[in-house]
Length: 347
Image 1 (tube, rainbow, N blue to C red):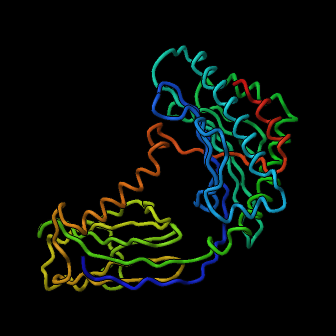
Image 2: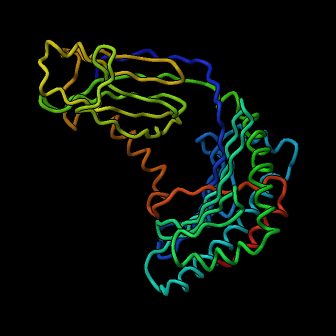
Image 3: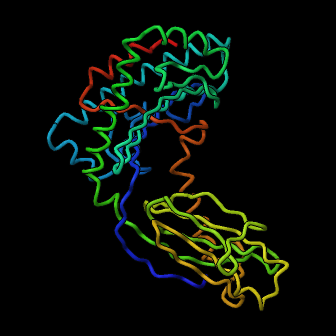
């Protein structure tokens, strides 16, 4: 691999912050915990719990600061994990009964979260439930009504819509309580969350006729863009942009693949690979002589493969049951959350 750009540390201010929690229950997957939950602040994992450890644990060192004024914080979080675990396990059985299902693999997903714009103060919240990889029901906070995504969810919609007290409580939670906890977490992790790390950018090509891959790896946060341009004009034809993937060190990688089969080597320098993060740009000219041809047995390629495999390993448990879910944060209002769990224990 050639053409590396230097790694830089710069300040970064996130305008919109998000708090996301992931819940799932599954059956028919003996090698996977029957219950899992994970919390994310601005796409950075902050907590994790499953049915094997039965304990909610911090995933960032700075999350321990949250418990400095409440020594029982993580015990309360564990109680929430246990309560939610029972709720989801009961709901997956109810769903199987309603859909006349017995054996096989089934997954119940619960998604909660809120967003806060720290410039405008605008707040958004959401709650969604999925079953077997499909949308089941979602909460519309504007109308304070549940929206059924499939006929089997209509019974649940009518049941939950009748509970006006619960709907008011949920609106209060998402637009007030969730955001207060989001702000508290953001203050605790601000130093880590606000950093910007620019990546190294490399050019790779498998054979002389293969597309040129422009790989940017080691950047943070994951709100980035990579594209190809000719001169000052961004090009789209013959360009394929990959997804942002996590590295095993907390940074991210992404790539763009550019088909230059119809372009002569003497004209490659007219094309550039551009990486953009928080207003900062890195650009690498596609000079024919510095693009490295490689085979899958080379050490450098192994580094890329290892990074991807590591990313998949991190996501493996969630990916194998086909979902990412968000959890609603109870915070110090443990009684409220337990109330909510009991409230919707039956679909």
